[in-house]
Length: 233
Length: 138
Image 1 (cartoon, rainbow over the protein chains, first blue to last red):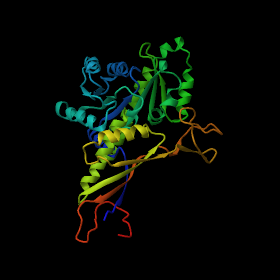
Image 2: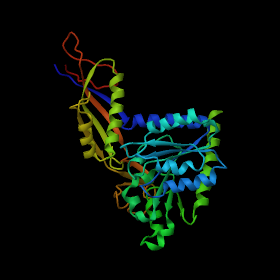
Image 3: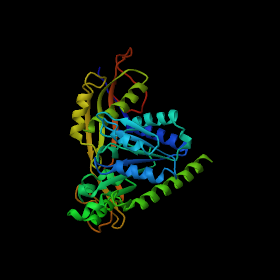
Image 4: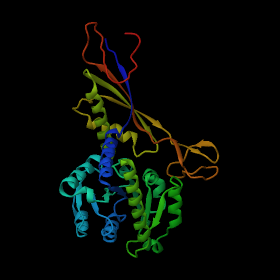
């Protein structure tokens, strides 16, 4: 006689990934590290932003980079010249980093560098506006980049990324005069779904917005360090 | 196509459950709940699931997806509304931003229908483990 049962799971589809992300965050918290997950479409300026961030903040904080790249080490090579640990993760055909891949990066950090000396780990996700938004990797905050050339409507079309982000960098603002684009409308479109988001207009070319961005990171690292200590007591 | 990775995640989660069972079971149907405000396209997920489960313990298992609409609650107007994805997320009446999502972010394995492989001497199957609603008539 054929009989079926019903198991109520009510489990998140990304349960396994979420478990891994929480585990990664525990490692970061134990070591006193703040982790940022940096996401955008390809070519929005993640790598150049990281270059400038490393150049400006490497004396202030001990930084490492976990670098997601589909098949190459081109980005990692660009970042290595700043003399910080850069751990490349080739994601192969996958279009985003997941918590397991980042755990691999953490494992390397643990064995080849002294993680307790680090203050900040920057995870550069694979260029993609869709899936990285759903796969947490163990970060304390999500940073999204949107370049002005991508258009005002992108936050409306790819809402999950912008709804999840804690900080949005509107990049390449030096190009805005050449485009038929309203920068305020980009910000308005994002605030429709995420009114608390920090928005910074930024140009890696002219340096506009870099200081506010560095301040935002510095405050986050300090605040997070306080929270991490409070949890240990 | 990120549904490939979503499916991989789904299979991993189901595999965890499958291995936690005290007795061997045969999974027949997996019921998913997929919110409209997620990055998952149900049709692509169906396709990816069919392809990726070939020659595995999930081959032939039916994937049933229930779509859940995006519903937000406007605290100014004290009422629910359905944001128009791709067009407008703020409240259509007062323009307050979408802050309180009531549904639409779900990406859940709701339940699994399964049967037991090992039959006991009475001829009907049985299983242990997760909470379940067993039929009342054998």
